[in-house]
Structure formats: C-alpha cells, structure tokens
Image 1 (cartoon, rainbow, N blue to C red):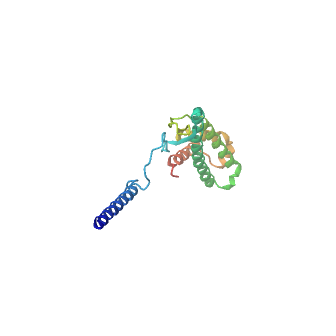
Image 2: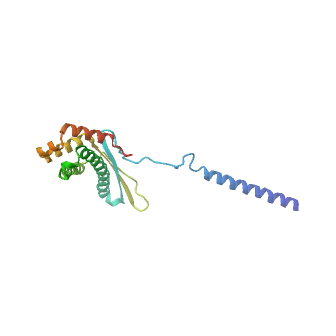
Image 3: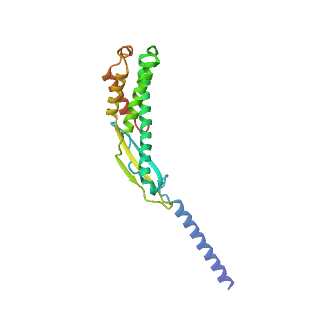
Amino acid sequence: MKKTLIICVGIATLTLASCGSSKSSTQSNKGGNSPFGETYEMPCAEYDSNSEFGATGIYKCSAAQKGNAQMFALQNAQQIVRMKMQHAYKGMVSDYTNSYGNNAGNDIQSKITAAGDQVINAVINDTRATCVRFSEVDDRGNIECYVGIRISKEMLAKKITERVSNALSQDEKMRIDFKENKYREDMEARFKNFKDNN
C-alpha cells in the first residue's frame, strides 16, 4: 500500500510538472516570432509621396456624436499636414534668405514667410477628405473616426510662389534677385524630397 501511494504521488508530481512547463512554453510563444506582437494597418492611411503631402486624422468620441468625430478627425489631419508644409516651407525660406544674405533686411524675409503661411492656411482650410472610416461602437459607446487627406505639392508651390511674387515690390525682388520660376522650382524640389520620416 505504501509503495502504491509513493508511485501515485510520483506520477501526480510528474503530471503537474509537465503541465506547468507546457503552459509556460505556450505563454512564451504567444506573440509568435514577432517582437511587436500582432499589428494592424491604420484605416485611411495617407502618407507623403513625391507629389503629395498626406496625413490621417483620428478622433474618438461618443457614437451619438458621429458628425463631430468626422469634423475633428479632419481637423487633426489638417493640423498634421499644416505642420509638415510649414516645416518644409520654413526650411525653404531659411535657405533662400541665407543665399542672398542679411543685407536685404528682415522685412523681406517676413513678407516671404507671411505670404507662404497665408497660402498654406488657405489650402488647408479648403482640404477635402480622401477617405473616411468609422470603427465599431466599443463597450463604452464610443467610436473612432479616421479621415485621410492629400494635398498636391506642385499646386502648393505654385500658389505660394504667386503670393510671394505679389507680396514683394520690384525693388525688393531686385535686391534679392527674385526669379519666380526658379523660386517655384526650388520649392517643388524641397517639397518633393520632404517625407514623413523627415
């Protein structure tokens, strides 16, 4: 009887030990071979390309406020693109002003910057969504809205160049050797090379 009891305890111990090791082995492989676990692509994903600035706005709110969700997601996407465009344009203005030197004065640089900012704001305010998606309603009654937008870099460069040309007097253009076509080409090249990873 004693011998049978010892054998049963031994078998039970081995069984429990093997179950424990099997469980921990399963947990360590839960994520598979990926160091990031399971991943998903964002709905309405819009990225910068050589020809367009792109962004996806996201907004979460109550499912009863679907209209607000779309409006605020669009505004979020617009703000993302605005920051990209302003960053690329400020780099353009900085390079341009460095090329003609400080003797031309800060007033010209201010006019060039203001003209570009006016165009950027006008273009952003006129942005239309290229994609709109809503998530399912979650346990709390909330939804997420995703809005993608794209803006042509060539069109933006053309409009900014026209505005800058109109903002500067003939005397100011001569002082900085402003050539409209060259300015537009330089801006198009800078915008083309600007990508999300910058």
